Image (cartoon, rainbow, N blue to C red; front, side, top):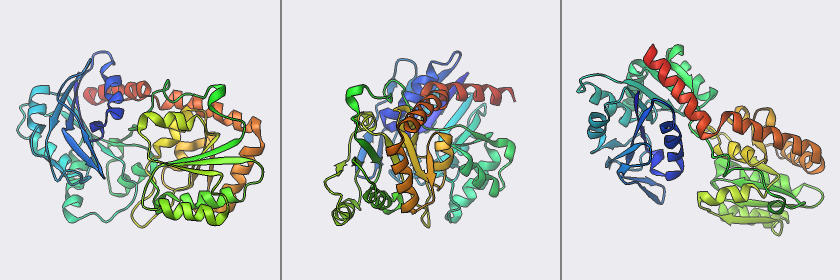
Length: 371
């Protein structure tokens, strides 16, 4: 069985762990097409073409680089499809993306049409431009499988009229359980520690976390890891609230350093809020926290409640009082904290490691070809 994954995400080596896990599946020949360069904000991610240990990497140049949903391949796509000769094309782009339409156009020039799977992470009824709406209708009709990360993206596709039998759930993001592991005794102190990791923007609701922390009794500390337009505003808020000595603004950290910060926390807060054009699509840091034995606490928006499940706590958006009560409970009740940490780690191992996701994808590939 030959599969090619087309993914801008895999311009980052972090996500290529999934491709390596796929390549270890029996009877599966895996190739990857990734942009030679991908612009992600101020960062430029690069990838070289060649052979990895178990799979081949094709690269291509992009037109409209950095535009999510709006870029196309200027080179590399046709070469990858022709040389890989895939039975299945697994595309990690939205069904409304120009690149998805480009792949379908290439199919018309192939001698044998592969099966086509396309990802859908969008879980908000956004007002797409007319070209994107037209592309999405065509892709939903012609794709063999419409992959979604979880239920809120599935609900959107069904509202658009996608055939339910085509919509299948397969999380895109996983973790290395040896990297995201519970802490040693020396990595986490006795003082109750709360962390946030992500962008410092209005939609992430970090101001809600700071206000909740200000009402906590007893001894505690907090770290805010990440950067963004609201960093200075949030630091000023911490000063106004009188908690600036307990809250450390770490700034941006490289991904290999993330597990070390997570292992130092007892609870992770993701207080995201819905905006006019966005709501949380998954919250990868939640599963990474669970892998590290950290209790996740998140706002009831988008996919957050379903990712957290019974292994953590969910509170209404922007509700400082309930978030404060949850954090106070976790601070005061050691046994409950330990129970949830153990349950979260167990679920992360059962559902979200790269090997687990690769096994699920492999079985799905087999079902597609058999059908």
